Length: 239
Image 1 (cartoon, rainbow, N blue to C red):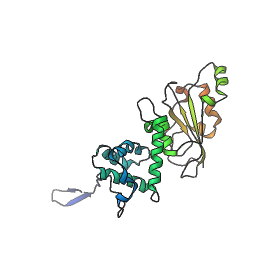
Image 2: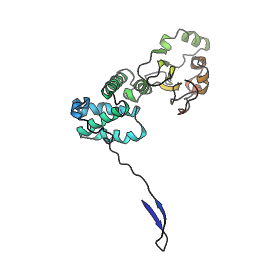
Image 3: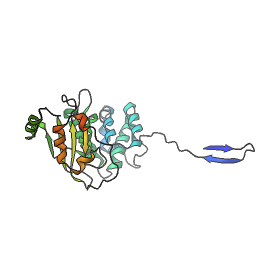
């Protein structure tokens, strides 16, 4: 509380400011015996292996708690945090979604890592963890139009992948995609350039005309395509 008084010591302004201390276990449900839950079998090493990837799904106010768990030597606190993280999101079956997250994180590490970066920090890895495996992946290796288009313009083009989802889980969004390009043309560092999933990065003209996506990937270099615009947090009219 901050008070401002005049020279007669009369109160002329009072201002309250709320300070929140980071407490990784503040949302742990009451009356739950953690020894009877899935977290009772987790070692501190297990938790630290996976907790950094929680940032892909975390809200802003959970980041400090993740930082604390990454450094803690308190196994009980770490277990409580893991349980509360998943219970808040899926109170009916937190264990199932924890196991699902682990599977996705392991897949990202094994298949979507980029150089020294773990899979969950790569852009494809983040999308895989958030939305699960795509129903179909299209890239230059299985695109019958790619070689013909490249020969006509005399270029090798940009390596790309388009991930197609029939449905985005836990939403009413259907028939969605993510476009990744590899500006360096080597390695495994694909960059998310566009998506029509709400809240993700996008390119306006590609939202209204999907036919432009591969046309421009074929025709232009990464500099001409550019990086998508900032995510829209509101619905842009595509359901």
